[in-house]
Length: 566
Image (cartoon, rainbow, N blue to C red):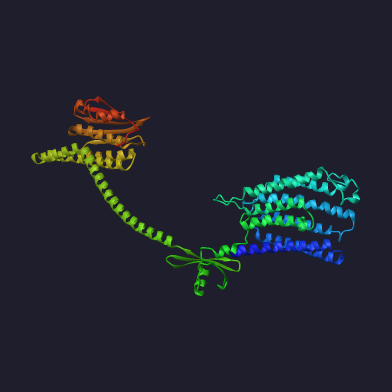
């Protein structure tokens, strides 16, 4: 049997002994005619009852953690003390004034009416958080309680609780119960039954099908005593223990059984809980002196304690960590088994190493893939560039092949043609690269291409003129198409070209490149009618050609500004 059970049994035995002792003293009082003995023994009985209730009240204040249950039970204890006090004052040895004796009798009902109500409130709080309290509507129950109490206390005025057929002066010997008394009995019985129901409802042990029967057993003892007392209330029978004292003791016993069974949480078992803790904990003072320790705790060296106070936690070995937390007057120290955590940390380290290896592999794969993509992109750009400038490259090859076979003037002409084609190739490649890197190409970029081509044309004696009447952005596809259009017109008339004028302008949503040339070339050979026919159709553009004077021709390309990309 553990220490808690021994203490509970000892206290129960002491209470039973004191009740029996008080009963024996009352028996002496009843059978003795010695006034002094009766007064002394009455005071001894009063002292026994008051002492037991006072000790229980102080223990409730110290042990019960739920603030509202503690308040209700202290109220119950105060009412029981009041009941015992009034019962003692009404004793014939202390009270010879008839009206006062009767009013003291009426005062019994203050406790009889309020104790069941406060017990009901306390039962509502069982199993609830420490700050929980019944809703305010329950406080309205104090109104009928107050009405009943005032009605009984003023019974001499209306006699609705007790009437006295033989006269009020014979109230102790003969009286009749009336409506107010029966309402008080119904009140007491109703809240007593509600208390039983709440205790029964909340007596389940969590996560089990077992009940806490101790409070219900105490209630059953009280019911048996009440019935037997009603049958036989003689001084030597069940009236041996005074009903007031017995009911107060049983009321305290109900709540004490709730505490001992765990139905009402208290702090009375913390020492045993601490001793049985699986943490290996200690409570020490500021110097490390141990005051409480659990079974699994181990001594701590002074130098370790000093280090632990500074750090708050200390790793003793790979599987054990020591913690310290300050409390009033010292520290709580506990050991923590971190073997599982150490194992998980080791697994995480291994996983980290594996992941780092995987990351390196992924990095290498990405690096190889990026190099491959760069090479692929470079090849794509190379293929695109070669495909776009291949006609001009072939013409340069032809010029180079003819150059050794002709005289100097014609050779100079061939070199000039190569220079014109080379300028186009340079700027055409530049437009391709710009198209890869950005979405829009400015008219200024197109103008720079045209100016470089003009410089090469002027070196061969061709008069040139360029006018840019717009600043809008155009797509790379349209810039390339305009520059290709310019180059195609120039190449078609290059052999007999005298002058060249280019105007780039916009008209609403259309950008226009107008080219005017002076050449001996026939108009029909100025530009092939099938030149990039599909590209023009897909972009919504068209070309207009017209002859102005003899040897002077004009050609225009109209392109919508938006849409498309290279």
